[in-house]
Length: 223
Image (cartoon, rainbow, N blue to C red):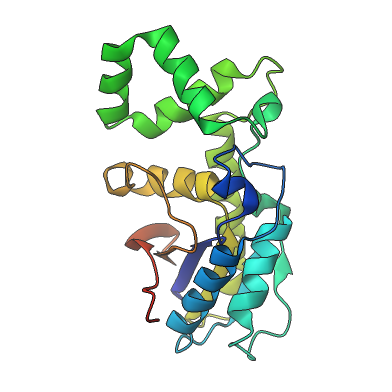
């Protein structure tokens, strides 16, 4: 069976990222730093021949994709896939990150809060907090977002492996949704602060299984 090498990229820093606000289905443009970092990532990946590229339907992911594919003429047109969009924060969209932390700390108490942050289940706890704090009850759940991204990536891999050839596939998506996918594969490998902007993680798909190869690799300033 063919092996599909997935290059999972988080988009570059955006204006809302820089402002420290939750950004799910809300969108904003890349900052200058975000653009420069995406350009460095593009150069870092320049020697990789991509057989296909997929991007979230949100603007920040598409902007990052255009920067990366500028050095990849073999990619004629990336495929836009709504299944790759970011976690939906519901009524918390645009909320300050520090406000979320303060609310959780107040409700749980400092001791319990610290234990949860340091625990192996911190990512699951993080998504539970978003869901619990969202009064509109529109925020996605861990199970919901994990199922969505896993089904999306499996569908892409099955489609790309139809001809029986090994392929390199670029996936440009978002921090929480990609973290949910990687947490399912190997929870202990997920960084405490999740995935950095313009990081790339490598996952191979073969024999109907996902295998983590690299996680949260970022370009250097000299890239």
